[in-house]
Length: 327
Image (cartoon, rainbow, N blue to C red; front, side, top):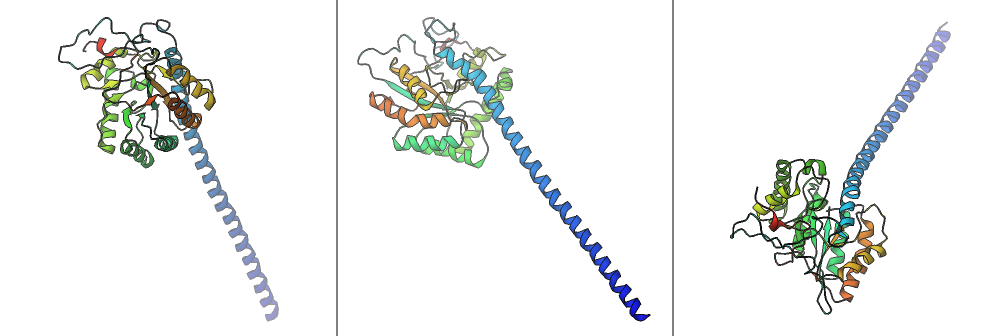
């Protein structure tokens, strides 16, 4: 009887042990499944956020900036009143002591035989991973450029703002948000964005930025507010804005090869005494990085002087700031 009872107890212990092992196995499977699911969901959320940012960037730059760049390639008169700069009308609405940058007349800027070529390489929409590679190439060829940057608060971007200044390039503003709908909604929204990017860059670098480029250019057709009101505001702040007269084409809907980007630039810079070259250093602009070295070599090959924008740079504007009255 005792032996039978002992065997029963042993069987019961084995049964309970098996049940415990099964429960642990089920629990382990559930934990693994839960962790795996959380990991998958987190990864998907990150990818969706990244894709959303890229889509916003592409929509902003391909549908707006690309259109403006194509317009800027047209000959004077083809793109309408605002596409090229003309000061024949003189300064309207400013006091004599009001210092407004004088934009060059496009015809006066045409290069004749023997005229030197001053070329200003400008990069919009950074900083990004591509900015560091561009800075490396500029350093290699001892060339200075201009970076029209937007607001980014990660540590890598802060370091790039500082590097741009430290290596002697011009740090300039391209809005904080680069969101056309918000930026151009009203003069108030533009003022808030401008103050934010100017103060932020000064806080990070100690450099007071004096130059600005409108997203889409001053001749964009997207702004719901008259661009002249924004230009007048920049005039009041003592800020000079720059458009461009040479476009690489790297923000258009057409996917140019690096060789084609170089050709686009070289075809136009020979036409002008002063060329403001539009390029981009956002994270998607890999072709621009690949095009930069042969572009610098080609420019140096024709004896062009490659310079950063400063207070002595001939101003290129699609809407002449000096013709815009005070608010």
